[in-house]
Amino acid sequence: MTDVVKWLKNSDPQENEFHQAVDKLIAWVQPALDRRPDFGQQAILQRLVEPERSVIFRVPWMDDSGQVQVNRGYRVEMSSVLGPFKGGLRFHPSVSLSTFKALALEQVFKNALTMLPIGGARGGADFEPKGKSDNEVMRFCQSFMAELAHHIGPDIDVPGGGMGVGLREIGYLFGAYRKQSGEHAAVITGRGLDWGGSQVRLQSTGYGVVYFAAEALATKNRTLEGRRCLVSGAGNVAQHTVEKIIEMGGKVLTLSDSSGFIFDEEGIDSGKLAFIKRLKNMKRGRIREYVDKYSEAQYVEADHSLDHNPLWNHTADCAFPCAAENEINARDAANMVERGIQLVCEGADLPAAPEAMDVFLDSDILYAPCTATNAGGVAIAALEMSQNRMLLNWSAREVDHRLRTVMTNIHRQCLETAEAYGQPGNYVTGAIIAGFTRVVNAMYDQGLV
Ligand code: NDP
Image (cartoon, protein in one colour):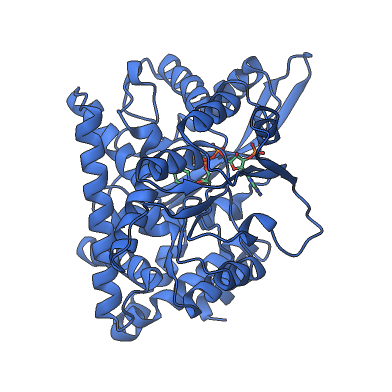
C-alpha cells in the first residue's frame, strides 16, 4: 500500500471504493512517477486525490401519498485545472461519498483525454427513480436542484446525465434551475433538443464506445462485421452501443438489467432494439418482457449466489459491459478469455473489478478501459456547452463527425503513450498516463493553487 493510500485510509477509513480507485491509479501511473522524482515534493498525488470541493446535502421531497422522504445529495468537484468541473449525475440507492470520489477521480483523466477544456466532477443522490411516478421524480429533482444550484454555473461546474438520470430527470433539473436563477444558462447538459440540447448527445457515449472498439480491432486488421457481441445493461449506454454495433454489421446476443439478462442467438436487430427502447425509456419495463415478444430468446434471472455472471459465459468475439461498476469479476474475466473473447470494450464506468482487469491485461486480448472508451459522452456534452454559448445548433452529421474524431484521437493518444512507456498495446497504461500527464502539466503551469 502506498503512502498516499495510507494517508487516505487514516483520514477516511470507510471510503473503500475510493481507496481502491486511488490504489489502482497509483499503480498505473507508476512509470510516469518514476520518471519525475519532483512529483513527490510537489505532493502531486495528494493534490490530485483531494477534491477541490465536496458538497453533501439534504434532499427532502414529498411522495404521492403525502409522506415526506429525505435523501442525500452529493457533488464532488475533483479538479478544475483544465476547465470548469464537468461530469454526470447518478441517482441510485447504492451511492456514497466514496462512490462519487472514485468516479470523479476517473472523470478527471477521462476528460483530459478528450483534449477539451473541462475539469472533472461527479455527483448525484441515493435516490431510486425506479418505481417512482413522474411527479415524485419531478419533486425530487426540484428539491435536489434547490441546493445544487448554489454550486454550479456555466464557468464553474456543469453536471450532465448518467445512471438513473436521463432526459426526464435532466428536464426537471433544468426547469428547476431556470426557475430559481431566472437564467437559461448552459449549466447542465443532456438537455432536450428543443431546449438547448445537442444532436447525438443521447447516443454519444454508446456510439463513442463502438468507434473506439472499431479502432482497436483495426490494429489487428479486424472489423465488427459479423462479430458476435455480448452487451450488458439496457439503459442509455447499452442501447446506443447496440445501435452502432448493428450499424457496423456486428451481431448482439445479450442485454441485461439488474433483474436478469436475455440471450438471443438470432441477434438483436434494429426492430428488436426499437422494442427495447420503448420498453425501457417509455414503459420503464423489465428486460424479461423481451422474451414475451421474441420467444426465440431466453431470459435468465440474476442469481447472486453464483460466483460468476452467466451472461459473460457465452462464446463471443467482443464484450461491451454497459451496466454498472464491478459487474465483471475475475472469474467472469477468466471465462471470457477462455471462451475466446478478442476484445473487451467498456461502456459503463469501471465495470471490471481490479482483479478482472489484471486477468484481461495478462491475456493477449484487446482490453479497452472506460477512461478512454466512454469519453465520447462527456466530449459531446462539452460540445453542447459550446453550442449553447454560441447559440448554435450543429447538425447530427457534424456532431457525429466530431465524436468520431475525438474517439480516434483518444485511441491514438492511448497507443502512443503506451508505446512511449514501453507497454505497447496496453490501453490502460496509455489512457491513464496520457490523461495524468495533461492534468499534471497544467498543475505545474498554474502554480500551487
Ligand atoms: P441507465 O440508468 O440508463 O442504465 C443502466 C442499466 O444498467 C439499466 O438497465 C440497469 O438496470 C442496468 N444495471 C444496473 N446495475 C446492473 C447490474 N448490477 N447488472 C445488470 N444490469 C444492471 O445508465 P446509463 O446507461 O446512462 O449508464 C450505464 C453506465 O455507463 C454507468 O456506469 C454510467 O456511469 C456510465 N456512463 C454513462 C454515460 C452516459 O452518457 N449516460 C457517460 C459515461 C458513463 P435496472 O433498470 O434494473 O437498474
